[in-house]
Length: 68
Ligand SMILES: [Zn+2]
Image 1 (cartoon, helix red, strand yellow):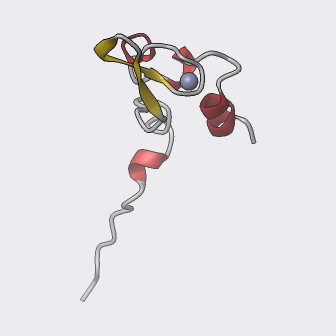
Image 2 (image 1 turned 180 degrees about the vertical axis):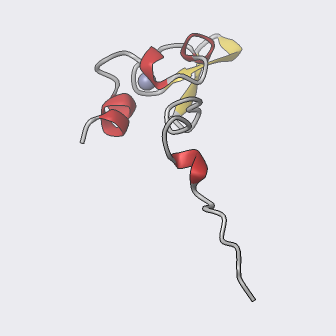
């Protein structure tokens, strides 16, 4: 019997890898309870919109994800 093995990590491969990235550390914007931003670069989550490229170029999280 042949066992089919679907790769379970397909979402971690291109083009999915950086297609939608919400795994970054977030924090609430002071004084704005429902507004969140990246803890590293302070860009609003609504601005990042799940895109790694929308983080600041110097963002610690972005650098860690892209730099190798
Ligand atoms: Zn960031």
